Length: 346
Ligand SMILES: *Cc1c(COP(=O)(O)O)cnc(C)c1O
Image 1: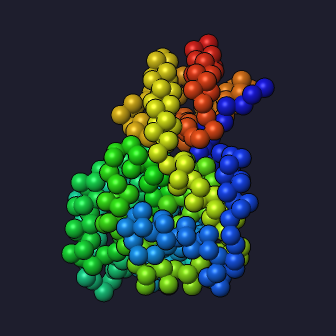
Image 2: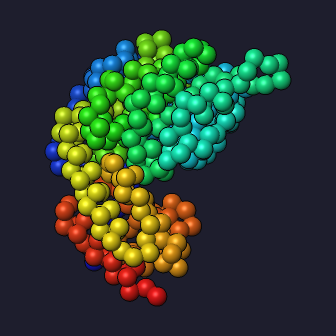
Image 3: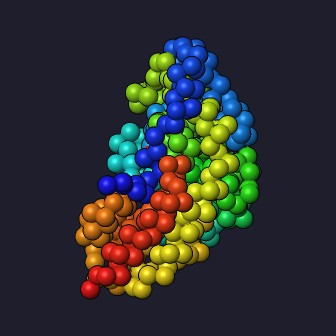
């Protein structure tokens, strides 16, 4: 049975051409700073994002954790959305590795407003922790891949500048935000001290993320990467995939977004499934099946038996993600399977 795998955009496998680019990439020892392919990917990514320097890291999680550590001191407080990746999916790493306390905000639809951030900033008070950092996520995964409005980013940035608070952007899918909105990567990045972008998602690479910021920030971040065990040697074999992807796989993400919209349309026509079409702005489709009487686990099992893989986003919520290895036919097929499972179910 052919499987239509919409669990995540991380499931893509490197294409033959990408493998060739990896295979032929010039290599060196990156802990000594001598891998030419890593150095190129770092500087190309920094340039794209309008920052002075970049650092190649094995995963997005490590990129975020290095940024948190580099921009704070133990005992500091970090403001972030309660549905953010850093809060939900990074194993409390910031508490363990950086001694940080999180102050979570319930941003409507994943979008914390400047007003909410303002209320969460600690006053000068001997009893209270100091607010050191605000983290945003663009696109916002659990909110359904929504694009962070630039106007709100600007307001939060103005507030943070005034209060001398740093800003980090979890831009695992910043590529998608830029392709969908037409706002350049540079414009999005301009408001942040550090930005992390992933190559292992929509860009289709096997692994790797890049953290960007000022030269001084990246020098400190490099030490923290070594501490966390992220110093890799001939990492150019991975960075080669990243360089290939920037050239070939970035602009085409618009196709993933079109397919996600098409799938969302089909889902919206299934009675008893709730989906907010306005939230389907990029490659993620989140929907609620509560009224069908089925739970996520049961639904996933039924869908899988017919060849469609999704992930659970809560007891009655499911997520589908389009990506490089999904075709128009797969989307049509996924729609058929969803209809079969949810329309015939009593
Ligand atoms: C995937 C993801 C990350 C990083 O994930 P890794 O699996 O560690 O590469 C970070 N933030 C968001 C929003 C993500 O979706």
